Image (cartoon, rainbow, N blue to C red):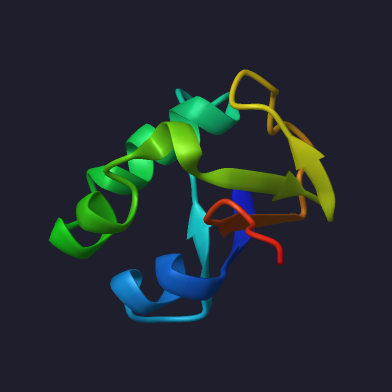
Length: 85
């Protein structure tokens, strides 16, 4: 499955690019699977996603939990927790 990934804030800075299109293996079925897969792509991904429990994800611009399936996703946004003030 091909999917467009968009990285935001310090996730983008640590990975070193604003986004990319990846062809995911069939074993990547949920948001959590995706984050684990990305960590295996290189040290920059591992560093950006090392505290994956705080990473927020949106599938087709709607917030998603880490156990949510990614089937049918056209775009997945990955970003750090939001802070307000």
